[in-house]
Amino acid sequence: MTAKIDMGFDGAGRAVEIDLEELLATRLLVQGNSGSGKSHLLRRLLEGSAGLVQQVVIDPEGDFVSLADAFNHIAVDAAHYSLIEIERLAARAREHRASVVLNLEGLEADDQLRCAAAFLATLFEAPREQWFPILVVVDEAQLFAPAAAGEVGEEARRASLGAMTNLMCRGRKRGLAGVIATQRLAKLAKNVAAEASNFLMGRTFLDIDMARAADLLGMERKQADQIRDLTRGEFLALGPAISRRPISVRIGSVATSARNVSPKLMPLPTADADGLRERLFTVDAQETLALTMPVPPVPPVPPMASLMQSAVTAPAPLAVPDMPELDEAEQAAVRRAVLAEMALEDARVPLPQLYQDYQVRCRMRGVAANETLDGFRRQFAIARAGLDPDEDWDDVLALGETLPEDMLAPFLGVARAARAEEECPDNEALAVLYQTASPSRARRMLEFIEEKGLIVVRVDLTGKRSISFPHFGWTTLPAIPEQPKPHVARRSSGRR
Image 1 (cartoon, rainbow, N blue to C red):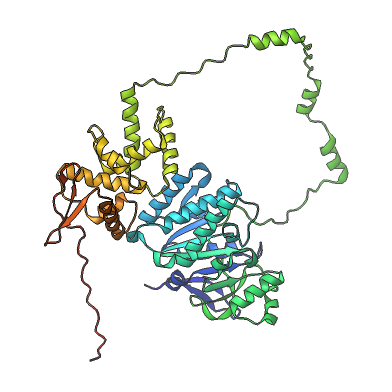
Image 2 (image 1 turned 90 degrees about the vertical axis):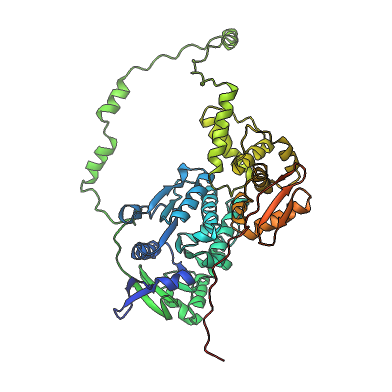
């Protein structure tokens, strides 16, 4: 499938198009000073490709939320969500191929970087079966991939820079096609900018930015001055998805508009100086009423003794409605339901963040989360492994305490199957419990647990695997650990 996106016309009036399929493989860098037309260019690209490919827009100024009305994009106001919820939204958008505009307008600079990093990292870490093509547009990319440390926190800067580097350097094989726009190339990290193969360079005036733009376009330094002469909405284009030689592009019109429009000249009031003076200094009716209202008398200052007495006998606080009282069994049932709810969601986030999310969910249901972090780790592993909490698993949990925390859930899942004499879980099922998309990592995990002496893995002559727990005398039923992959015949080269 090939698709051409009409971006405008060149100096001779010929249409200039972007090959969308080539763009997905080679990425795009847009540069231009404020007011050069970068956002207009991105909007033209997004509108032209809206029905052809999934789109994700990292929008620090809220300029692109209007796409939601015209093209069914999902506008996400990041200020209303936590980081864990942002990661879940990104995972669901990746799974269901929904186009999203992540509006970061209401966040401080550090929070913008953390939010963008969490969203991009979740897209990058999606399972292999979800590696569908996505056009990932990042406006004001110098904020998220700065060339040097600035006023933002170091932790937020590192997380955002790492996510942007993964997007531009390693995202192609995962279907992520980065389109980044920046005001100044000198402010953008070089390892992020260097991975783009297509360029649209707009107006800029600083020598260092003109020199870098000329280098990327393959122009001589003496030709760099023409970048200063570009008009608003005019760009120099180069790249395999656009043109093999630098060409001038005048960006065409768009169907939607940004909420933040450029300032326009407006006529001044027609009143003369005397009329304006009268409007500024004439007291209106409300001000007159405020001036004529009697000023309440200032109460006399009480002596120190009465102040001390009033401090001792402070007025009773207002009555606060009591929280609904639940007995211990009801509270335990609520906590168990919260754990079961979280176990069904994507758990590829650090354990401390999951613990905080668990505490918030419990408080929202009027229940105190009385587990410690270690206690939550065990209970969450039990929920993910599908164990019956009414059964006694203390011996199995004690045996699994020697394992790393991410191996406890798959260890308990195998133990549950062995205790119930069910078929041995395959590598894909263990990979889900192990929070990875790689069945081979799940296989290596079993080898590690076997080396610890906790299990014994047996493979019979038919290739079926069974796992025993010698401490308890449990053994799973044999089952095939991996489904055979379909054989793909190689095409003959025709040579003998």
